[in-house]
Length: 281
Image (cartoon, rainbow, N blue to C red; front, side):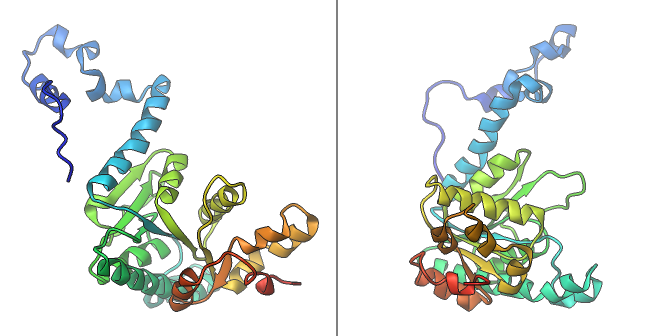
């Protein structure tokens, strides 16, 4: 961990601690007397949004630097997909059928983490949204392999606590979706997308857009479950309509199992193999 003491000047944390011991007077009780960086009411003002955006970008970045996280493998997927043992509790028949992807995400994360640990555990660290469903499966697989994993939670009105398998020191909570999505991609070496809902679609399409427009280097984007994806998105129709280029169909590939995904990442060249899996091609 990096030694943060680099200046002879008094540190902010020292002043925060000292401020707790000041005499109790009408002046010191006034909100105006609080240290600005320790004043939650002040930091929560609308005018401080640019500062909060910066803080939310910096806090996880510095923490991951301190933990020596060099690169990540991203797992996106639905919070509502149950573990196979809980498939009878699923709210729909389709969710019950999709429970097999919980095990695939778990096994994929386990295999990736085992390989990561062989190199010291700094590269290819699993990162998920830190919630239930596919996210839990990813963190669980990494934990079962004896490695670390990252969870990027976001505050929602109905949201759960982070799942129990995220490495505690790598579990983060976000207010801004945009900054959270940035952290998913900052260290990404591959993006693996399991069936999910609006949030999953938002995440995968933002990544594909960044790659398509050259705002992000080309990395493996793997969609688990060809039948699911072809049912909800007609990728071929987008190309036929001309709203995307034919070459854009090569930005991702379909896979079915954890071993398929490992093989696809190892042999990724970003071209040609996807088209045969698109309806009508």
